Every structure is written in structure tokens, then in C-alpha cells.
Length: 276
Image 1 (cartoon, rainbow, N blue to C red):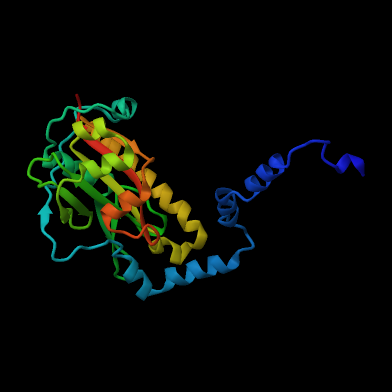
Image 2 (image 1 turned 180 degrees about the horizontal axis):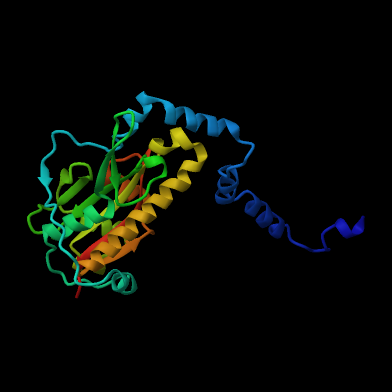
């Protein structure tokens, strides 16, 4: 039995570290959100949702709306890129320097439309119309919302805006200059000083969790990644620089969006600006 005892003078810190590793929240979540063939309850629940006309009709409108707020109708014209798709993908880079020049509203509109805009509308056999977007979403639930903090966009007063993909409009949630707020939350003072706007991707978790349970959090993060890559490729195509930012003070950005950080929370930022 002596070989089961720790060496003389050994520290228990290593054992504590091992215990903490075993109890890592990320590992526990990953394990608890796995799908198993024996998990028939979740499959039956999803099937019941898919078969319910009432629920399907409700799910066909998964967008936050800001009624009564000043609204900017965005241009829908898509300017063809002079670059082939292969070049756009190969030339995409995370930019840390921007020109400091204003961004055209048409450029921002095109980035939003290609990022997570409505690309088609289809009517199912039961008569329910579904708006399809440029980014995939688990179950078509679209839990990710796009906000835009603008401070150097032609035709757009400085402020916080919410993008409505179904109407292709921006609702001004809060007027004002919020660049310094983002700088304090990200420590990217120079980048934001030279940039023109910043997209903030947030997630309304309940929109997916009610259907997919613990698995939903995986779907939400995957969707945010899809949208951000669309945005970055769209920015490259129109000659605009983009910088994806995953490190920021969560509570500060959530406070800016006026969300609680639990039911809805900021996930990802994409800084936009002219190429230097």
C-alpha cells in the first residue's frame, strides 16, 4: 500500500490543480452537452417542436425589433467586387491600422447584408414563410443579434444602432459617441481612433436553448463565428479593413448594449475602417 501514498514532502498543490482541471467548467459543459443515441427525450422534444404549426409560426420571426426608434433604411444595391472569391479569402487579414476616413453608408450596408442579411424567402408546405440569411443557424432560430457602434460613417449620426436583417434597416438605440467606451473595454485605443465603426454580435440564448437544451450554447458560438467570417470577407471584398475582437470586458460591452449578460450577452466584436 505504500506505493499509493504521496512521496515524503510532496505538495498537495498538484492534487488541487488536478481536481480543478477535472472540475473545469468548460470540460463539464462539453461533456454535458454531448449528444448520445440513448437521449431519446431531446429528440422527441425537437420533433414535437418541428411538428407544431403554432411554434413554427412563432419561430419564423426570430428578430429583435426596436419599435418607435429612429430608423435608417439601408441601400440594398450590392456592388460587385473586382476581386475573385479566392483572392478575397486569401487576402483577408486582421487589420490593426485604419485610414481614419469615414466609411460610406453603402459600404456598411453591404457588409451587414452579406454578413447576416436575408438572402431569400421561402414558403413551406404549411404556408409559413421563412427568411433565410447568409449565415447558417441551428434550426433557423438565429439567436445572434447585430449591433453597430458608429462614429465615422457618412449619413449616420454617431450612436449605437441595431441591425434588423428582415427589413435591412438600422434602428438608433442610443445616440452619442461610444468609441471611448469600446476602447476602455478592449484596450484597442489606436485601432478605434482610426476606425469608423464596430459591429457587436450578441446572443439571445433562450431563442435556441428552449429547443436544443445545453447543446444550444455550441450552436450560438458557431453562428457568431459564421457571421463574423462573412463580415470580414465582405469587408475585404469592398476594400474595407476588419479586425475581429474576442477579448473584451464583457460587462462593459453588455452595459453599452443595455443587456443583462445572461439572457442576452455580447459575444464578439468586429472593428471596421478604411484601409490605410
